[in-house]
Image 1 (cartoon, rainbow, N blue to C red):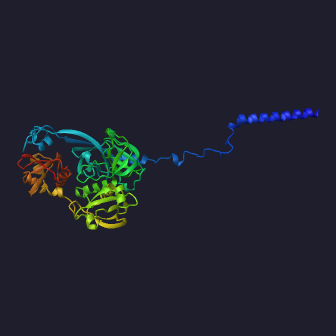
Image 2 (image 1 turned 60 degrees about the vertical axis):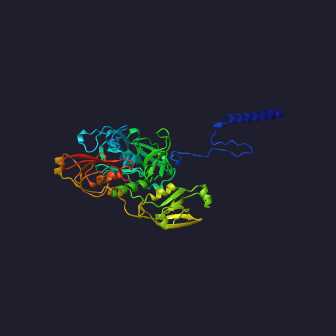
Image 3 (image 1 turned 30 degrees about the horizontal axis):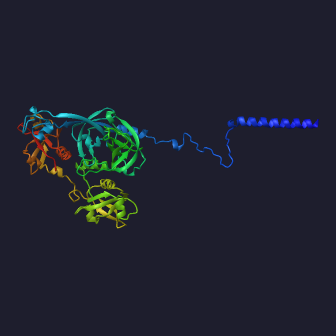
Amino acid sequence: MNKIKRILTNFLIALLGALVAIFLYTNIDSLPNHQTKVRGTTPIQLTSYITKDSPQMQLPDLTKAAEKSVRAVVHIEVKMSEQADNSEDNPLYKFFYGPGGPGGSSPRDNRQQPQFAMASGSGVIISPDGYIVTNNHVVEDAVNVQVIMDDNRKFTAKVIGRDPNTDIALVKIDAKDLPYLVWGNSDVLKLGEWVLAVGNPFNLTSTVTAGIVSAKSRSIGIMSGQMPLESFIQTDAAVNPGNSGGALVNVNGDLVGINTAIASETGSYTGYSFAIPATIASKVVADIKKYGEVQRAVLGVMMQSVDDSIAKAQKLDKIEGAYVKSTTEDGAARKAGIKEGDIIVSINGNSVNTSSQLQEQIGKFSPGNEVTVGYIRNGAQKEVKVVLQNMKGDTSIVKESASVLGAEFGTVSDKDKARLQIDEGVQVINLTNGKLKDVGMKIGFIITEVNKISVSSKEDIERAFMQTNNKRPILIEGIYPDGKWAYYVLKPVE
């Protein structure tokens, strides 16, 4: 009997154990925080824990920068003269009037009117009184410039000055208390930093795109001036035709660049866009406002970026700097002791790793400014003070393009305006040897238009002359006191 009890007890214990084992096996997946252990291995589990507040999920807030910049970026519409082709007439005159235009002096009403084309771009208001920066290529051939604000107000703008070397232009509208952007410091931009491109692509006004700075001091060979300065900020913010002259701003809404170009085989955005750095653009604008043209400083060197072969030949520890191929006789660099074979590595403590970076750094200064140039010679680091010069080899203010006109100008009385039925004009009161005398202009002539733009002051005439591309003629129109209309065509400064 006892033996049977023991057998039954053991059987029940075994049965109970089996039931417990089955229960645990079938329900173990529902138990929390379990780990599966395998002999000879370390338990593995995911350790990341991401919440909505985790920095991994955050992006910079671009809304304030976008709102601020959209109000200060304008749409620019340009009316420009089209050059007529296949004409047998005077090639200079047909540029303005097309085939069949009369030669010499002619009655104003009998002339064939020029053909016009329309173009558009963007601009950035940089002061509350209506100064607007844009690209030179946006307004280069303009006979009329219209500015449309973000609130749809429309103004006629005057081109104050242009610089083909940097592709920067300054225009002005007659307005007050306008929203505007403040220049930022493009030197401190970092690769990977967020930026916004603001403009009017394909006439889609007030468009904002975002991207990062993908490269700095980029040279792409598109400038048309005699001394092209290229050191673009490259971004992946989407930019398309119509964005030219628009704003590149940082997350604070500061103006760090002027959008200018795209790298594309299709003509539309394919991944890269380029902006002129604020440090260059702001200097150009300041010079145009103060002097009427850019006071360009030169170091007086021919240079190239250091590559592997140069670094090995010069026994450099790393590839950096701009290699001096030659120096200009009586130039700033040679006067300071810089020689052929030196490697320039810094300007005022700012590192220079390519020739385009050196151009950018020098481009911030004017003739007469002193800079500290860091360079390597025979493996030794050196520094020297250099007084920068202009293209003439001195430190004076350059206003050559205005002086070659060889004329003194005066105002036209209201009585003469009424008698001659003109609204504006500037009278030639004296002539010396110069461009105007060379083309046959006489004292007393009243200039009413230069390149189809009305003029009312000496500054308007000089500015129009200085803005003209070396490859294009200048058309001067007006009337003599006896009521005889005349035009003169002259070449710009060579």
